[in-house]
Image (cartoon, rainbow, N blue to C red; front, side):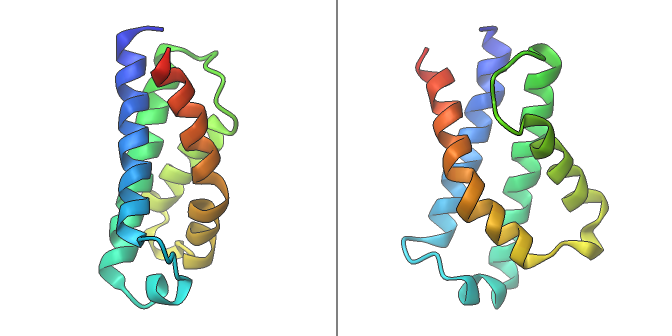
Length: 111
């Protein structure tokens, strides 16, 4: 794997870890929904994840990350559709998809 690809995957991993750090162990949706600063921080990390994944895909289009294209699309939706960002959808991504993505990325980082 090219070092540049690994660097972008490292950035993805850091952003996922940051999201989980911001949310703490409780990961309470009500707290998330009522805390604008927390929501914006999570959205920003999702933007970084999508941009880093986009750069990794440009360097290695065959990278085996499930939903890699949807990750980039999510980044675009958060940035360009800022007025349509749905807290429930973001929460679902964080809870249901980021743990799997983190495992996939960590496998590449361990190579």
